[in-house]
Image 1 (spheres, rainbow, N blue to C red):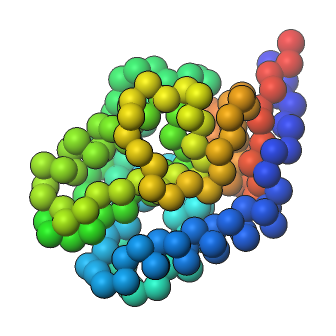
Image 2 (cartoon, one colour):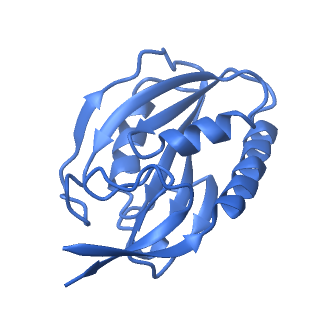
Length: 176
């Protein structure tokens, strides 16, 4: 099956918004300790670019959580295959996600991390697709609200492990 890519957010627009988000995060956490947690694999490019703009020397860590597999909609089951290595007790925690749609994944992470007694726990998402939300987990820092768009790829987001390397955000249109 062939794919067509419809450009939604160009690379320059992403770069400008990520820099702005970095300033917003820095202002929200003027005094640490802050732990920024990247949700692999999708958020890795966004996370790296964002952290270049976050002041104050946050700790960083990575987790691996998957819910899509090779499809274009959430499977409904979560696979938590890499946990934190950093202790988050009494620290501010910022979970950095590529995209929040149903909200189930971030709701799960908030539940798991809350049990580890962080000082605060917030979500930063490159893309928020609010119309698909089935939870009420708030997103504190949002790059782009892309309501009404289909399946997104690029800038770390993938379809069956393809298109992560693209420097912009595209809507994937399956042809045929």
